[in-house]
Image 1 (cartoon, rainbow, N blue to C red):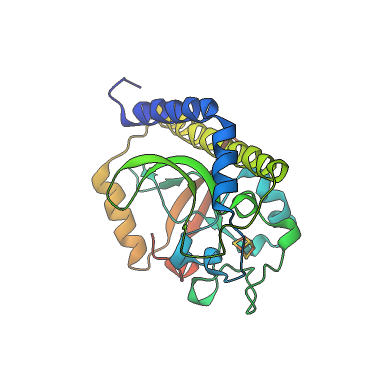
Image 2 (cartoon, rainbow, N blue to C red; image 1 turned 60 degrees about the vertical axis):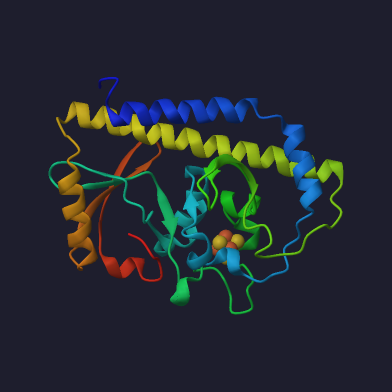
Length: 242
Ligand code: SF4
């Protein structure tokens, strides 16, 4: 892997994100959480693909699903890479959606059917702590998702509760970044060992075949290695991608 390799650069930039996150002052996040004073009003929007895309699952979220609802797991919809044979690669699993892009666990009354066992991202939402561009492309730290679009605001949150939320958010974002670093490191290792290479044209062709209804092979990163799946577009009904 050379220094100009895109995978190497991706790992480097994720490492920078990790360092920035580690040095982000937790008291700033606590202040923002208290200032926004968010409370869920049960509108259910955050649990739909049209509003939030897919629910990405960390490895720690998987045992509950594998033991209780294995049929709800799919390779995450944003296939990220391909080798020269047209096999696609993605960094983890996601939850299926039901009709209308609603999470498979969202009831008609907009309640979570498995609330006590909900997943890492569901537990911290709408809080977040990462840098991303806004509508004008300005990259900065974002701490609350969809402010003004859902829920209620300016409700009192005491210091202790805000500190607990801030700690959970930071832990989640660190776990997510480290998972992504693990994925790209595994890509680098396995491409090197198996003499594979990423060819943009073949990646585009594989996605086109998939969108036309042809099943494709997808390698899903989990637990430090890859699991193989053959998937078809019908499993992704309700998502806007892939
Ligand atoms: S698991 Fe529950 S909280 Fe998470 S997206 Fe689905 S319905 Fe919402």
